[in-house]
Length: 113
Length: 116
Image 1 (cartoon, one colour):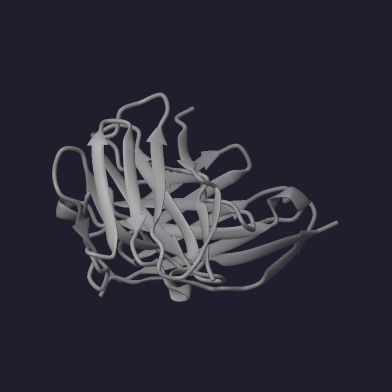
Image 2: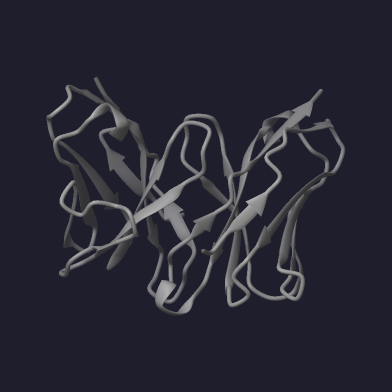
């Protein structure tokens, strides 16, 4: 069974700090990796996608992928209270599973003023 | 950016009734859409893949006769929960890739179903 694991948290950081969110996945053949943000009662919102080993930066967000370790992370710099949400890691295996996402259980992030 | 809409946003129904949820891609065509379900404090679980012009493919453990999916056009997929029961109460979310060449999904706003 393909699994995506996240620390459910909650993770609490002060405003302005760096929040670090981690995710591991079991399917070594996974092709695509995503981070979604979900506010309570809302649907997920795409933050980052990453496909190759290394870092990918977009504004305050940096995604890191290490396929050898089957590990993907998200760093949020200069965290703001509005970043408080559940962050979902999602993985796509590719091939015949193209487009299908397997989600982790999510990490609850709280940024306190 | 790409927009996916869902209707209704919230529905309350009596046990035994059927409920239809619509998912529309507003500014792009989607030959494939995905339906997810999210129970409280849990993550999203893929239910089925909706394919335009052909039968949907269901994930293991999802009853295809209970969750009817129709993808009649390139911009509309519908999920019908037949003979709904309280255990079907959940947050139903559809998604669609912006293009067939990408697996980046855009999610609809979701439908909160409550079965009494």
